[in-house]
Image (cartoon, rainbow, N blue to C red; front, side):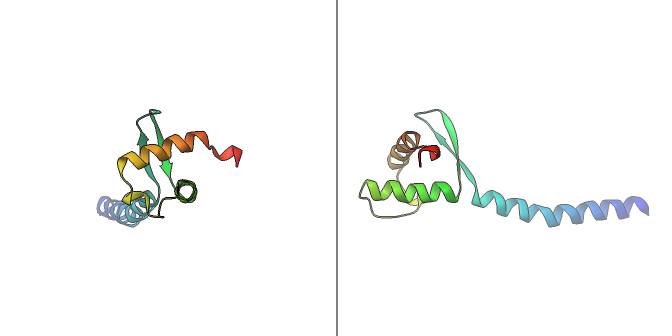
Length: 87
């Protein structure tokens, strides 16, 4: 009986934590920068910087997911020229 109770508790703990982990992953995605051969974590900070990038380039504001791959590569090049420490 103890074995079933332990298995049940383990299953419940996975059922409770899995959606939380998945929700957290949804907000922070990693994207690969081909030109610089590195990964970037997409978060609120990157979202703000992307909006600044669009403004500087006089491009209509849109989401990262709506941007073309060429525009994304332009952003990563811009981002490497504008690190957070300089702001």
